[in-house]
Length: 287
Image 1 (cartoon, helix red, strand yellow):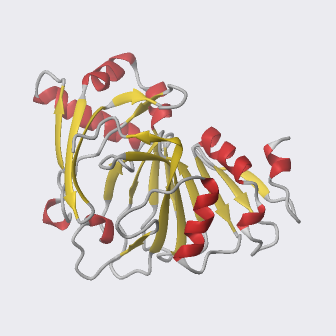
Image 2: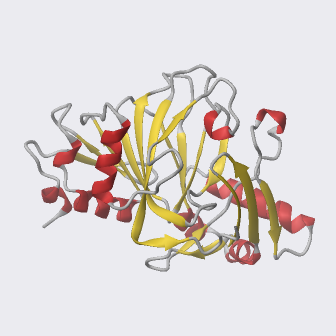
């Protein structure tokens, strides 16, 4: 059975490509339940296209509804707050995830015991036109495919050590910048982009160190080259949120971040993380 046929419900949804990667599935009749779509078929789309946008389907009114839907995809990551993270600006944030600033590229689970395979984001309320707040995703497999051999050699020598302390953990992760997808072995990048230049405006900096390079010149070239490649339009998808959107992503391959948005804008996302089958133990976790 094709993915298109597997997604057929009362009215077959429209499936279109996003650029430079990803696929959108849109309801023909606005407000149809997303639960009518085959999770098996949707999972296939995410694994093939890295990112899936579900638009114009009925939303989830409560966090518990999003959590229940996420459980159809697999085992959810459980945090001290539960399974659903409320991503909304706080008046006095203790961490940048609750601020309105730019969020550097990173991968989810890098400081936890298990790395989720999928992220499911729900847009409860969009920030509004012109207010920014796009969630950014970079296809690291494509970045490596398009990099020249000398650049790949430099990146492949680098090993990042990342330490971050926040309300939910105080952990260190050590990972090669270039590693492999844990299921099919495709080369991917695991990298936490530095916050250099953000100054005091960035709340709760992670501590970053990189080994395997010969001098400061190579370190500077590592960061310059990675930033240019990760944000290259041929590798970067920046999602402009509409209220009601669901976005499901391949956390094993992509890095993601956030564009800054207008302070006080009504940007409200919810996120659940779905573990792989079996759950992927974090190979870089030190503590």
